[in-house]
Image 1 (tube, each protein chain N blue to C red):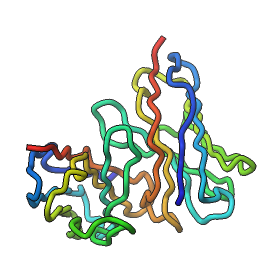
Image 2: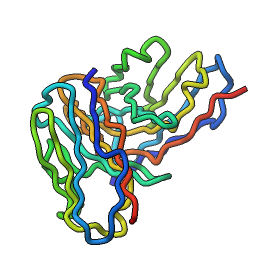
Image 3: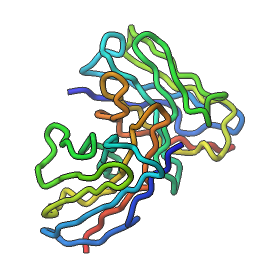
Length: 121
Length: 108
């Protein structure tokens, strides 16, 4: 059974960088043919895909966030991370990590339970 | 980006009821449509992919239908554990894959 767990600060100051980590168990980010994704839900809004990293280390981002996002992987810890720079209150959201099914199916078959990040001074 | 519109945004129903949730895409997405169930504080769960295929372990009271731009999620007989928020999501073409705004299913 694949499990994902987000971790990181729950409070970030405006203009700073939001950093979150997703720890994966029951599957390998380096050998499995999946995309490892970040998705967020801002208050009162729908779910928004942020981006993903593939086992090769290549990544792909939502064009609306691309200039501020970096997703990276640490295969030794079986973790992948999100960095979102220059945050504002509009980046306050619950952030989820998720696995996208094989071959870039666009189907998210396993998710973490999410972590709330508030941007405030 | 492809826009996904769900209706209704909220729904009250009783145990044993049959409920239907609709999802409309702003352009044809063939059958590249997924449904998720989400309870507060929990990880979202994949229910249905490719419009009508049940994900492993999902009870058979859940079903999905549709193609092109119009899709439906049906729960044939509501159980207590089904009260949650449901999201549709398109996985057509390339990212960003977009989600509907959600339908909150509440107990009447």
